[in-house]
Each structure stands twice: as C-alpha cells, then as structure tokens.
Image: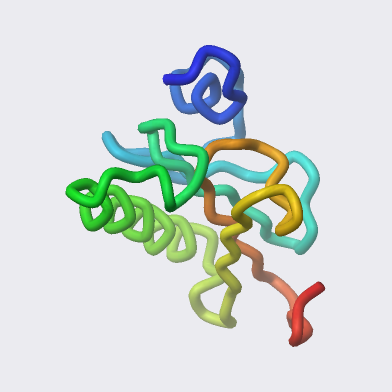
Length: 116
C-alpha cells in the first residue's frame, strides 16, 4: 500500500466507498463523480500506478483478478445485459488523476464513439 494513495486507502477500508464487489485481489466500487448512469472503478489491492509498473511475472495474475472482479460487478449491477465500456487511463495526458491502476466501468446508457 502506498501511504498517500486514495485507492489504497479505500481498498484497505480506511476510507469508505460504495462497494459493488470485493475479493482478496480486487475491489470494485461506485465512482463518486459518475460519468454514466453506472460508473464503477475496479482497483487491484496491490499498488501499481499503471500497467507498466506491474512486474512481468505478476501481469497475468493481477490483470486476471481485476477483470474477474469487473465481470462479477457488471453481472451484479445488471449492465452486462445492455453493454458497457472499460477504460484504463495511463498518465496525465490520458486523464489519469489517481496514480493507482484502475479500470473505469461505464454503462447504463448509449456511449458514443470515438471517446473524448
């Protein structure tokens, strides 16, 4: 856990969040500033600022656990029926504001393409 990381504190239970799904590797919770009717954030419980920081030997396990958590969360919220979008921002110019790897899960309305 990074001491100053918001998502690490949420994953550790130090800051409350509206949790949708949690297991030993990942947490999925509702975004406090939703950009769609359903806007979730899926975070690994291990701290990595981006995909590029994950050690090669951990990529499959960490990303597999994260996408497995997303799979359960979209089922629990019901957005798997109509469709949803997964977004990973990496770096400031991509729009990453919290330096902890996370997946935005957006659904509940038609989403335009191309995005922003």
